[in-house]
Image 1 (cartoon, one colour):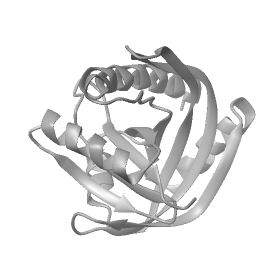
Image 2 (cartoon, rainbow, N blue to C red):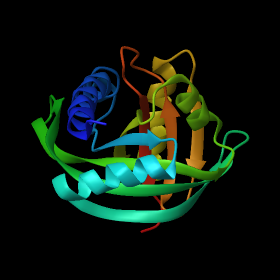
Image 3 (cartoon, helix red, strand yellow):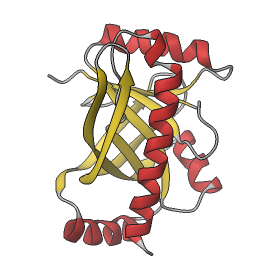
Length: 193
């Protein structure tokens, strides 16, 4: 697999997702939301290992969570995931009438379901080639802000929230907003610190 091409394509997807966030969320909130994480969902340990080998030679690794249990807050589904994080050389930015342009480097979250039931992720693996972009994520500072973002997202989509999860890190949810190759939009909040 051509991983350089895969990551370049992910960068294009990140820009599309940022445009969706800028269009739907930024006008309705008093904060700038920057997509700082793009996920790649892998179907097997072998696939994530091959990507990790390539990534370790081309982009800095910023950590691994060998096993994290995700608990569904919205329905069936409790599963274990292996996460690996890599810092990309790509910059992102968000436009805001308040502060102009805000930029940051974004990271790749490589993930593989280890065991358990993950309906949303299983659906993606059935319908897209592995690896596939699962989500475009941004972090909010508090649970209050997280709930405000959810309220705006609920108003923007007829489907509403697809799923919400909790793990040792925090809480996050998935919304389908973009179409046109944009993966799930995933707001997240850190509850650990």
